[in-house]
Length: 238
Picture 1 (cartoon, rainbow, N blue to C red):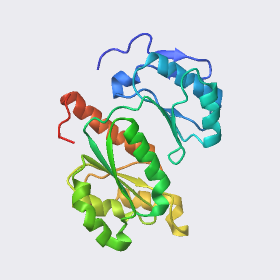
Picture 2: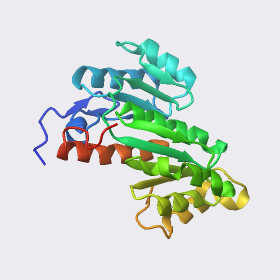
Picture 3: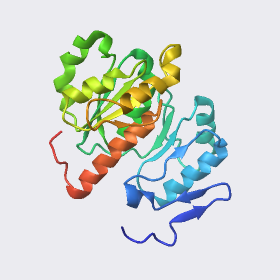
């Protein structure tokens, strides 16, 4: 890894912005909205928009604060996705790497919205397969071939989290599993699904945090970033 440039960090008083992250990881620092004032979010976003060239993202941003951030910033208001709670400037163009976002049920939709929106903003091509959980396994089998044609699959499921194992047993590409807090008492707000995914008998499943569609999209981005460094042109036709 190359040495970090001396001007890689920008102190703002309330935050120190990492200006070198895009070089290291292919995407500027992402702003996590909870706990920050709209003016602070706007200032960080302005710094990134001025000093970097890639997508600038704000995650978990509710509609009210999103409007305040847009009003407080020095740049255009960006594009806000209320379902994904994502504010984005300068989305990356599609880069030829395909992500399948697969959900067990409709209740998992908000997490899927975040995963899909972040993935698209980073230049990944997203196809969504909603409500194909194991309670009706024929629904999954009907689209298994299409899911397996992606370069990476994000599987989002609550309850007992079985969908991740089912998908990973059917496809040969990397699988990123996202447990959700969907479920009744013994689901333990996603802990049951988390443990089930972590102990999957399907080898090689990558598991991220509960309800973190963002983390799953970033795992897919890292895979694509690594492939792009090795193969500057898309490695497979769209």
